[in-house]
Image (cartoon, rainbow, N blue to C red; front, side, top):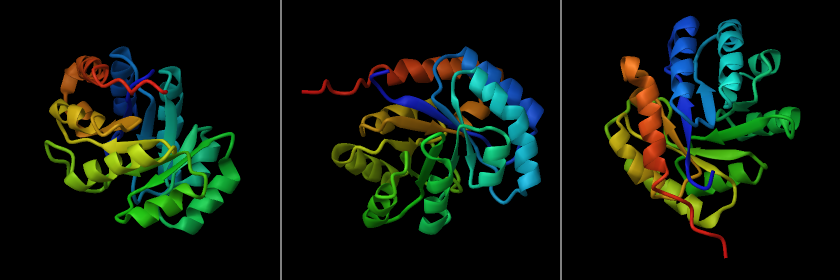
Length: 213
């Protein structure tokens, strides 16, 4: 698709069976590129247990299943990739272990130099926005400026964290990012998840990428 795509981030705590049903509703609503299974601080056995339920659902929905931080759970559950933002050394190890068969993403940096250093490892995407920050209605200003700077200058795909309403999608898509990350805007929409995803895709379709020269 020649426009930004959705990158869903799970809540930090969830019941796997319940979230699996919500994911099915999400996929029924339209295109989703990736789902990040985000369980900060959880033990490998708990991440693995959740991922074993969610990964097949995500893959059947046509999206890539990405596990946050835990490379062991990523491998054991046949996830499509891992998101590593603990250190440059950890990221390099993940890239060595998983590429090119699996996706390795990173992000969460405060400085432009750090983002460029991450990209030099050959990472598959750079994530702008703090996963552990409370969401507001709009994307954080630093997320928007960082994503716009990156999208204009670099080839490595980038993801930017939106706010907790669909009204935030336009401001994020306008930066030129490849993927727009949503969390609470989806999971807190109750039975309207399918409609939320459909509307999100409708909005993103109004932000096509410029035609290449």
